[in-house]
Length: 355
Ligand SMILES: CC(=O)SCCNC(=O)CCNC(=O)[C@H](O)C(C)(C)COP(=O)(O)OP(=O)(O)OC[C@H]1O[C@@H](n2cnc3c(N)ncnc32)[C@H](O)[C@@H]1OP(=O)(O)O
Ligand SMILES: CC(=O)C(=O)O
Ligand SMILES: [Mg+2]
Image 1: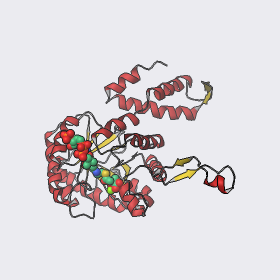
Image 2 (image 1 turned 30 degrees about the horizontal axis):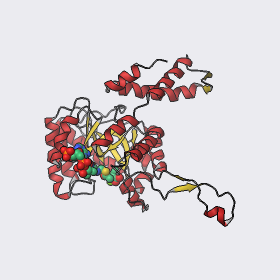
Image 3 (image 1 turned 30 degrees about the vertical axis):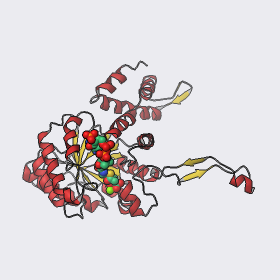
Image 4 (image 1 turned 180 degrees about the vertical axis):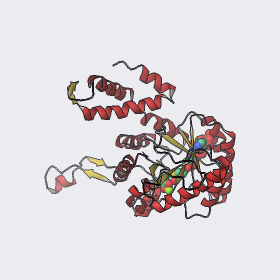
């Protein structure tokens, strides 16, 4: 563990200085594509500006035979595309795979200036981040990269979840965490075979009218629960504590756009800043859900106006507002400002609000 004295020192001579604060760049949807899939890859340049993050995936979902083609495809796309306001991320292969070393030693010199964030899968503890941190610094120094490439960890093992705080604190490169519900479910031996989302068997049931057999067997309301609530909440606290950003992850039922929106909204309400999109139709859902609504911003601005110097308590629409609820409203207002800076449609909608 580095002491606080040298936490912000570059880990290689000539590497760029680590950031002292992780920028709050909008990242409502991290859109995954397989750079070895020519049809998919051909669509990427036209997606610039329509999504906050484009992520060239090299890990799971890319066939073993296509690992080299995916890596080379990502280099080609990155070198030939002007990403404008859209961030470019990649998900490298896992640290125990035969591909990851070539992923890093190829990508950093070739496209290190364009890569904003490297997502590291199956992170188990701080030691995994330390390994990537030092290697990136060496590669950045050698290639003369001007800004540090940030690191994002996927939580997809029980050990990773148990070590969540040390992972967040492992390096000033840490940008955020995503939930990896598929691998995590397998690692925990959970009994769901779905990629994210709920499960109809995970529920609570209304009490029976009485303890008679008839009432116990009578139809009763059931309420499906969120399998991922605990992990997402844990992730949100760990990220907030360390000044980095939490994300939901994949929602594998591409056809069920309604449940996808529900899962994304739960994550947004709990504190996540964004999610993954696996298919183009999930981008619009993520952009909608992870942008505060016009009604929420109208209310937040009214509270800010009503609270004057920000202290004391006032009544607004029959509700008490005070210093704390003002801070809740400022979270929304600040997010709206960040999003308006990159999304002209949202800016117009927020600008039209009259309070
Ligand atoms: C647990 C985890 O690790 S999750 C992360 C790893 N998984 C991924 O990255 C999956 C990424 N997504 C995909 O591979 C694909 O979207 C699939 C396999 C889920 C579905 O693909 P398809 O069956 O081709 O979907 P569909 O037929 O609806 O595609 C419609 C169009 O969108 C394109 N498309 C599909 N997914 C994407 C994408 N992620 N990015 C860009 N374009 C895409 C298709 O090429 C197709 O193009 P066309 O109209 O010119 O033919
Ligand atoms: C996101 C991911 O990699 C998983 O769910 O396993
Ligand atoms: Mg996984």
